[in-house]
Amino acid sequence: GCEMYFHHAEWKPGITFGELAFHFPDGVPMGLRHADNTFSINPHPSTVVLHDDSILILAEDDSSIVYQKDPVATARDLRLADGRVQLGIERELIIGWTPKVETIVREFADYVLEGSQIDIMLRAPDASVRDRVEALSNELDSVTVRLIEGNPLDSASLLAVQPFTYDNIIILSQGVGGENDVEGRTVSEKFIILLLLRNMFKAFPEESKRTKLITEILDSENQALVARAGVYEFIISNRFISMMLAQISEDSDIKRVYDDLFSEDGSEIYLKPVDLYFDELPATVTFADLMALVQKREEVALGVKIKEHESNIDENFGVKLIPEKNTEYTLVAGDRIVVLAENET
Image 1 (spheres, helix red, strand yellow):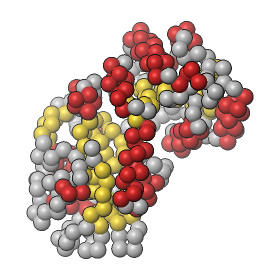
Image 2 (cartoon, rainbow, N blue to C red):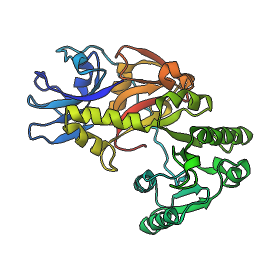
Image 3 (tube, helix red, strand yellow):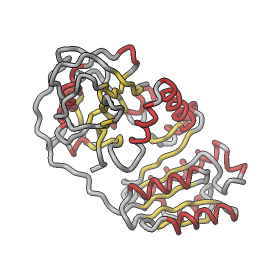
Image 4 (cartoon, one colour):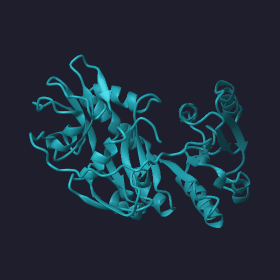
């Protein structure tokens, strides 16, 4: 996979951050580390790169990062569509409880609009969990936090909460009944919930069109099983944390980058619909074309997600990061561009 690295070279005098993106056969610059050890994540494309600046770059390997004096690809000057995502009040459903829930809820509260709702569904939660959910509800004024008691392994109980009315459903890897629910920690129960939800979505296709299913996986070997259940958005939490720690061990400044990316302020990584960028689809473009186009929105293109391949594990579920700059794509409705941007609009 791809990792983030800091890299320094003898930059062409006067080169801008936007121009620099086209001077690497492998990798896409994401930001700058200045001589005073301050960072600029996703700086404006017109920012001049100073001789003593290092770049933050997403690349396959540090050995493949090679700065070329001349551009490795030429992008066309495409017209940028005037598309923006219209944000609205959201409803989120969390199934299961782990100590991470409190952090997840607080992060949601930072990102969603005031008036949004976060429901936590548990089977027979104990007093400790009840108290912690109530504390969250009292702490967060901008969102409503509710505890729903019900058995997500029972189709009638699950249907009663109308899961297809939520924007996102997050299924966690530990118990559906609270921290003491040992039996709820089995992988099989999670798949039962996923299959029940998928069957409900098939029964209510129009109502569930906007609902996203997201699940946490502790063992990467289970990702194929999750995909067969129709879920293509998941987090392999143990693997993700291990990879983060490995990168931080190589360069401690990477932790500051993650702190910035995971904070409400500054830029984050989003998968944005292609119709935000193109007036007409399908559109046949190179990745270099995409890089130049998203710069017009002061964003950095990191890759693509092709909807046609989202169920194909061999195609990484449609996600391709830092493709070769001259790689050509015919983008259609449902495809997405992976971008570093200040907000999801």
